[in-house]
Length: 116
Length: 115
Image (cartoon, rainbow over all chains, first blue to last red; front, side, top):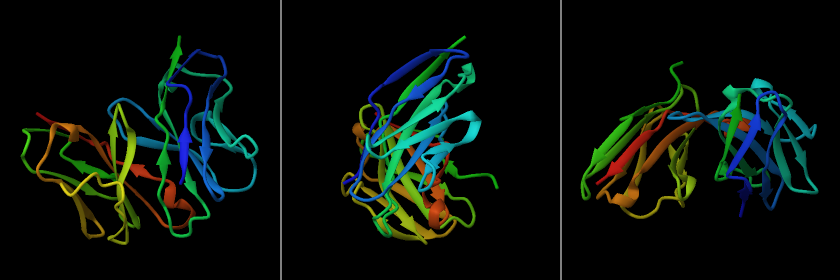
């Protein structure tokens, strides 16, 4: 079975400060990891993914995420937060060793609020 | 491309009525996913298709739910009969094959309210 945990329901940061949104995962094989963002009344949008290679992955809008195999984590980060980054963020995982299994499991989401 | 198109955007119906949600995926995408989002349960995968064939429907809650993909450009999710606990936002998403198979493009969602 595959699962994702986002331990924080909400994260609040001041504009200009660094932000971190946490994610831990569990899969039996190699993890394929993703971050998506959801703005109000919209569908989810892809931010970045880790399949293999460098542990630090860079994505859209200045976001990056670090894969840590020993801690089974894939935290989302940004050096300087913007008010426009305020949204709901989802971590997702798929078991990369699952052959033709393309089932993507999402976390519950973390609401990020960036205060001016 | 106009992206993934879902209809209706909002549906209010009474318990016991049939509900049909529709989705047009991005042209050329091989995979189509139906997700349900609620506050309590978050985002749940209901079913996904590959080349119009259902691959995994283990997330379909019960026999009241059914999904079809008659061709590469159209899918439906049907609930019959509907119940208040089915109230949720239903998302359709599509993706291409290979490593991009999980870079999903989501539609705007269909918000269902069952009274």
